[in-house]
Image 1 (cartoon, rainbow, N blue to C red):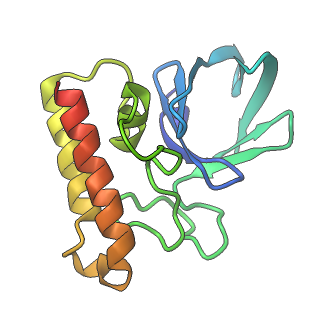
Image 2: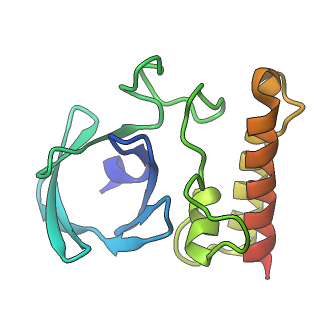
Length: 163
């Protein structure tokens, strides 16, 4: 469903990416999203089944978790998604990535990709993320250390996926 596609923030603030019928979490885990009816869907994760409902631009799950679009509905966040500018306190694309070598799934989440992206999709995603997190960008001057770390994660993800 088109309304589900893209980046979402879980109630905990962790970034989640929905692409096609796959949900990719910031820890690299991926699960299949199963349609259950109009604006209703489910997924099985860690031996549990979750049912979600899309209403007013938010996904509400049967365990009480609520996902919203990037920055939307978060304290101090904008009222609508603004992908071009990182929001203060926004979860990094690969926040749970352990130091050292990242997995393919973590690299895909970092660049907001899913599946097997072609070379052109990979380059476009890298350019978008690199521009967003470059430490020299004016919007990142007040948090240069965070921007530098995220920019390095983006570069590492791109290099990993390039082969």
